[in-house]
Amino acid sequence: MGAVYHPVRLDSSDRRRLGRSLRRCQNARTYRRIHALWLLAKGHAVEVVAGLCQCSRRSLYDWLKRYGRNHKAETLQEAPRSGRPRQASILTRTRILRELKHRPWLLGYSATVWTVALLARQLSRRYGCQITPWTLRRRLRQSGLRWKRPRHIFCRQELHVAQKKGRYYQAFTACAGSVRALGS
Image 1: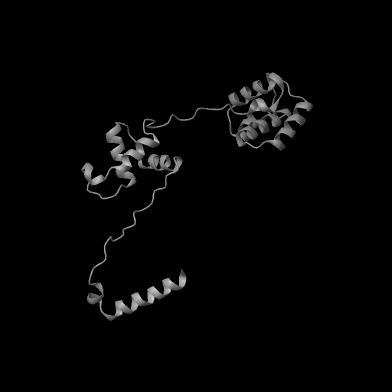
Image 2: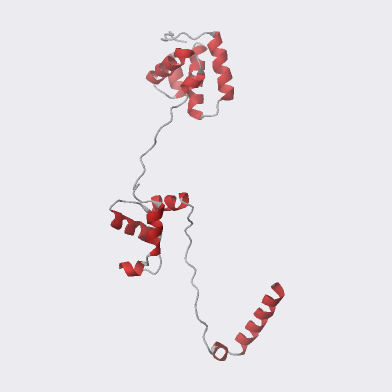
């Protein structure tokens, strides 16, 4: 093992404390940090630990400095982050629902129903912000909406369908009617 220099000295009580924290740790990143310090407390060189944990020496020294303030493994946990800013925050659930109430063919599209890509294009055009179909699907899911394919239903029955189809159709409808009567 190489020469060991740490801005904070780790002793056997730190090694035991870090070992207990390793057994209780749930987060993978925190586990990695605790494990790296535990290896340093066992006497491994910083270069060796950096290679084993696949992190930079600078990170190891930073983690060691954080741990050295109060010798608690909880200080190695990540701070909450805001994350990536939300794209097209102007598009609220209400605005999406308002746009869904319009018929696409009345807005100049050659479609009878909304598709995700078509709705994303319309929202981008109307509100002046870019939204991808993937983002729109995620937003719809988050707001409790489900996207389903349209079900085509013929609204009127032919008046003389039995005459046109013949005896087979009459037998089929009689059979289907008796099955429906049994099922209900």
